[in-house]
Length: 224
Length: 290
Image (cartoon, rainbow over all chains, first blue to last red; front, side, top):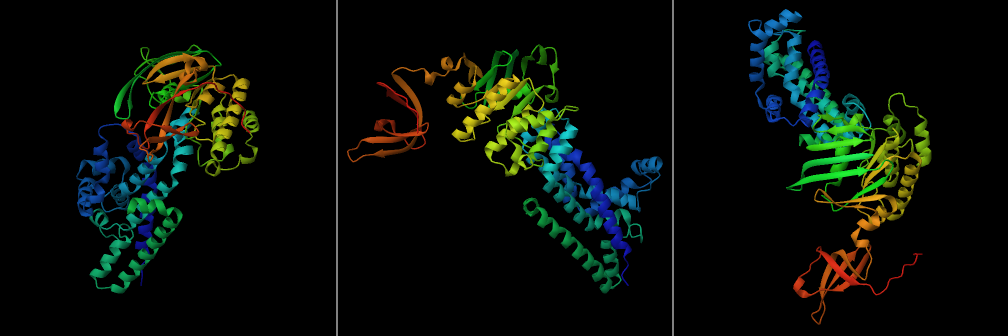
């Protein structure tokens, strides 16, 4: 019988990751779009790394860093009382890093493509950077925001390597749908693997289709 | 009184150009900045607005320093009381016409000014539409209204009317003059159009290569309007032809008129060339067009 927990866990992870990334990426993308610093290529390289790195490599280093034997894992545990390895919180952190470029780049493109005169007009009208961001810039780059949200959500649903490395396979905590599928195939339970796969397939297909319908031209531009 | 003393190294195309400018503008005057493109006119407006930082110099508006290199003063654009009409209008696409104007209000400023501007610039019928659905002339009126909401002491206009056809341009010039008389702001407008320069300005500042080459009343500054029997007009070659007798001729566009003129074959003129046309006027009579 199909267990719904892994599927729900997958969508919970994707939702939380997308929301946190949306908040975190706004300042990061803003900075990347408008900075004149010389370290910009370095920053862009770091943000892009998850695109090319095997997820297992990323997962391995995250696992090492999060472990209670290392400074980072230790201090998080001491300060927040959260153990990151083999926990849902750890998965969220890993997913945020893994999906970072999928949110940051569409947003950065959105900021860059805005006519500079819009921002300047708001400044000349006496509006602060903050007001300009929320009233002028973000509302006029909705297609980029939608692209970032959709890509991040879909990418997090498809995660496997990172999750397996840092989360393992604990039912109800870190066993997400992609891992459940792997599990069922290992135990020759093809019928159940098919059920999970079909749900993921249909859901991601629907989300992408909706996104294409809403702002199709933009999504195609960054993907193809 | 506006006092400007600006120095800035600019990149015009691939070449560096040194902009150096000293200018005093009496309060309430209408000034046009004219001159070839790349002369630094827009950069002057941007430096006044705080959107571009001068390398050296100072900007003083009615005794208040906005920029002073030596004293380390550089007010951000937000704190300079001016209106800016951008060449591309820069209306916020996500807001209706009315919302664009409301957005421009300062904190605590009464809304009455919006009703007045909507009335004067005849925006009643379009005030609930989004900028994307407006024509060029309508956008221009909205941009002008928005720049005036904060009742600025200085209004900067960057070739605001260049994209409009002649009749619409005339109407907007009238609006602008009317508002200028009512509100008594100091206006600085970039314009290429001699007719516009004459109609609008108390003073013309003619710029070339980052320097002021002439300044004063329009009729004294605009050289091509100096009168006299011999005139040099600049035009654009539309086509070059050679007649059966081997005589070469060119079609030249000057302003709104196209002329067929003789051209020595040795000049080797081709379509797209910029040319100078020498003409002699025996006498000229002007009559109103039907």
